[in-house]
Length: 312
Image (cartoon, rainbow, N blue to C red; front, side, top):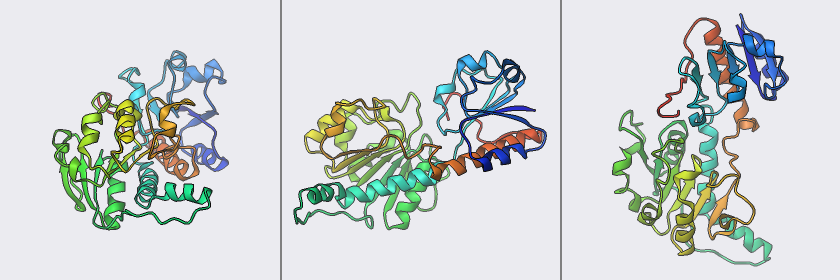
């Protein structure tokens, strides 16, 4: 089977790909530098694909993504199997969420400002994880891992998913989106790890943000457009919510001068919790990609096939 693997990879990863039996593999950063003959013969590509590249690949049957999200590939023909890297990011993004949760609870950004002023000041209203109530909106690998970690530290945890099934034992209650509003006023932390579907867009508008406790913490590592940016800005300016910790935002990349940069109690990271090139994610993503290529080379069905309607 002729295979193309996109991206810049370590020598060890290249070696492991080349050791898969029955595969002739071409490596390329973006694919555009490969000869037309290589593109014409390829049946499998790992790392994604563009519309322009697809036109040169008439034999293509499999596309392996290095991302968990796949909503940007709905245009692929149905006969091409699309696989994502589901599960590869869960623990690491959950650790990022845990970090920002503790940061906001302990008011660490404010202490950093106090340090800059060389002041000796004690801040009150410090929160702790034990006894807190935490809601994960999204119960895939990321949301589930985050709740597991928060529960282990003493939190009472709740989850929201499309349909109620497979409730982990450590989760107090699992509800649907339609039932979520009743829980929001009780939660100390609301963490979003939602995929990029149409139902997600604008889910947290002014109404839902104001349903949350005044001193609640909002996290977002899913999709930036799940929060209405202008509504969040106004709510934060009014003193509602203890903190909003955003690794994703709308628009993205966030342009210089955008009011989110300087909004009170809004803490931003530039979409770094799930980047597969980060060393902490790279190996887990490559394990998914290597496993799927091995399965296909053995004539077996791959895992993590994307549901085109859901986008993940």
